Length: 130
Image 1 (tube, rainbow, N blue to C red):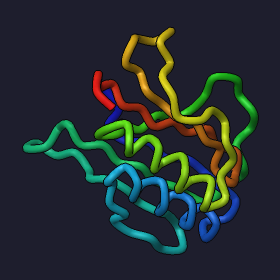
Image 2: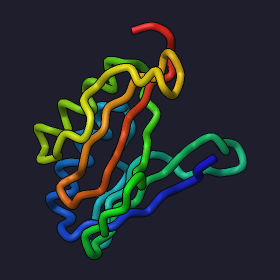
Image 3: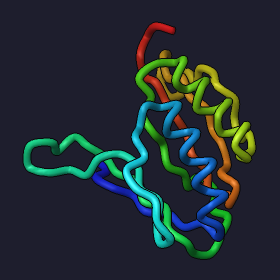
Image 4: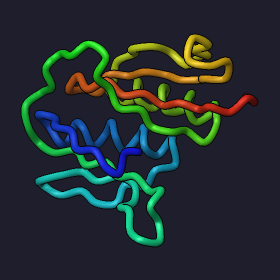
């Protein structure tokens, strides 16, 4: 459903350390960094409509908003665990450790973090196996 997302952070250098770590844990490539943005994933085109892309731009820290977050697909549960561990090691804050969330569905395995700017992000694996 989502083609691309852009978020803002007050410090790109701090964000780069965090997003480089969590995206690497999910197998998502960093495709460019400069003074105006960080870019991850692959842009969609006619041959690859399933791709997704994240841009992190400088701007104000996000305002608190209950329920607002971005969720990234993980290839397996180990990637969800790696996402959470890498995010904590890179300056993020725990907002829900890896585990099953059966109120969504029986195999919903996810972890939640706050990036250093306060953005809430999630990684999820929907697979039935660990």
